[in-house]
Image (cartoon, rainbow, N blue to C red; front, side):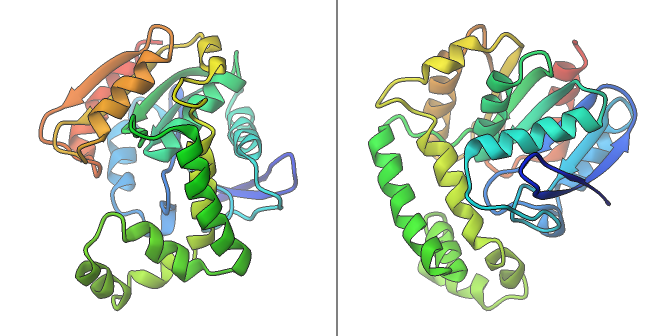
Length: 264
């Protein structure tokens, strides 16, 4: 593992694998290297053609965080990783990390070569006010330092009470709960991804290729959300993967990434 120091003094832990054009992987909520059993296989499949950078987003795993949080600080982390790997990179973002990757693509012209978004979790039914209300709820938990409660609140949206209770009794729970406070970061990313019901005007400034990908077996709101995001980005393309859900298989994703990032 290597580390670097971001602009605000936060330490960012990362691994670099392979050779070729650089791809930086931007994780979604709760995801970091110590608990991620799927991404190593994806990296293995990509590393023959690409230099793949896998990092812990600030406040997770081997990465520290200097308060206060802002989406701009996360973009600075990505910029530091790009600068440490030759000054240019493609970005792959998963879930809320997809929206963060898109924002970095907007903010870092000349450094980002392309952005592939997998299932940005945007609901077309919700406005920015709805997202800010949700952010306020988790921010209050973060203020209390209730990492376990934040993780329970977040996972409860995807699990039944019985499933969540079982998860919390398993050995897998403590490492997830350990990063519970960072869920506020992801709610902040999503809250800033809408201007009322509209796309942020800044998305119009992105000048690199963008591909928005989702599975046809994911959560019901994902397909419409992916279409909404793509509609707000100039020249963005879409791709739907048969038989895939939010936990996309490396075998399905790697060929799409290879085709996309191999084209520039």
